[in-house]
Length: 186
Image 1 (cartoon, rainbow, N blue to C red):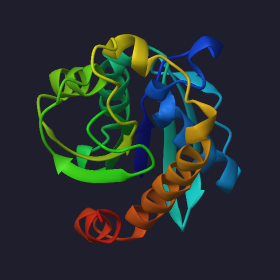
Image 2: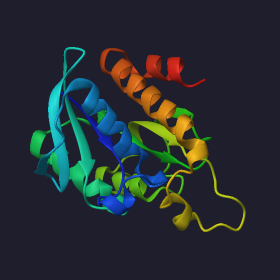
Image 3: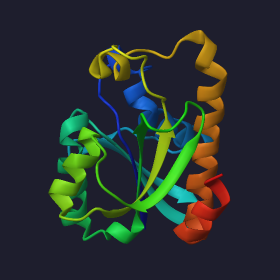
């Protein structure tokens, strides 16, 4: 079984924020495939279904971003799930809004959700799709920026990025992550 974890913060006040693009991608994937992500377990909302003939779990940690690793560890331990079947989807300051970057390993790069996952799994090697949110203007507080909503001027880029992220997730279910990277890292 493949498992896809979108990172974000729970609660309506965070729903449309830059930090929640991972949740947005999971919600779109669930909508596309009629999967209900409502089961509460592992400090997360979980939905299971089949996509492209593959059994998939879609997961939204409800721990707040900086504790995302707790959900991943609990899911791994309960299902004996392999990190090689995991894709983590999250926001990235170093990628331009509207663009995605795929990687199979690397440091947290200052992202607290990824830092938590690395701490709880003991490795930096897991597949990830980084969704671009661009950097804030000089002098703007990063925490305020990532917890702010997207301005109207970025809504089209955001929508396109969510669609492309879901396309990449679907492709990765039936192709190697290396092949998926080659296709989607432009």
